Structures are given as C-alpha cells and as structure tokens.
View 1 (tube, rainbow, N blue to C red):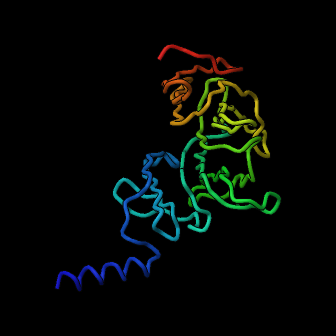
View 2: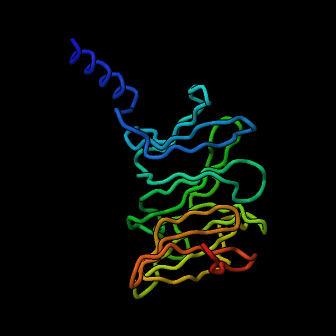
View 3: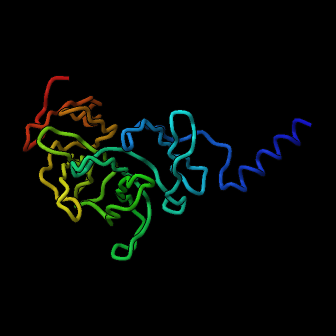
Length: 210
C-alpha cells in the first residue's frame, strides 16, 4: 500500500512538471512590500517558484531548458523594483557555444519579466552577484583571464545592459563570491587558500581587514 501511494505521488508530481527534489537555493525577498520565498528547483520544468510566507504559490517560471545554476535578488538599477538574477548555461544566437550567462528579470507586480537576457559579460565568468553599494547598485563577477586565473570585475547598469567599471584582484583561482554592504569576500587560491576581503570605495575594490 505504501509503495502504491508513493508511486501515485511521483506520478502526480511528474504530471505537474516536478520531481521529488530539494530546492538547490532558497532566497527571501520583498516583492511590492510583501515578504516572499524564492526557490530554485532544478528538478522542475519551471525551475523558479515564488511563494508567500504561508507557502501560497505566487509565480513560477524560468524553463529547465535554460539550465539555471544560480539565482540572486537585488535592484540592479535603483528603481525600487526587485530584480532576479539567474545564472544560465546555454548558447545564444551571436555566441553559439555553451557558456554561463547572466539573465536579469524584474518584478512587475505579478511576475518576473525579462529585463536583460545578456549573451555574456566582458569575459567568461564563473560566478556573479548583485551589490547594493552606497555609490549605486552594481554587479560583481569572477571572470576568467587569458593565460589562466581569475579576476574580480564590477559592472553598473547603463540602461541597456551592464558596463564594466573596474577589474582587479587577480589570483590563480577565485571562488565563493559573497557581498555584504560595501564588502566583497572571496576565496583566493595561490600557493595556499586565503579568504580575502575587499571594500568598495566608489571606484575600486581595495583589500581590507577580514
């Protein structure tokens, strides 16, 4: 009986375009002043779901075919509306190779709608996040450089996409990107692994005390 019940649940979930899986990411955000939970479920056909704090589904979207690997929330242009960043892995018309790409959607009151479906940043990147710096909102990324290694890069929204305003902090490898206020933290790999802390001074990231 238990096996039959389990099979019925699996069939129901499959019919809904969902498999029994734990969300890869869970974020908390305010949409139009309403506290919500945003989940990335890699086992669903529509991978991103927005719920109220009472678990009532508000919206779902972002096709599994885009191969999403990360979600972030912020306000990329300072207009007061919540933006959703989605890291996807796909080809594009003008860059027909599989690569990580940053897609940005904005909340219109009912759904997340496309704001910028960029084909790429200045260079190939491994990670990205939004930053609410006092000098204005930014996008911070870990990018690959010619000859090997990584650098941090900072971008601003220019109305049609992102323009790079700074790059630096080169290392053999960078990972674990995190931003809090004016502070950017990242793991740096060289002769040994180091957790580095940088502060944004309005023009550049400067190394700071951890």
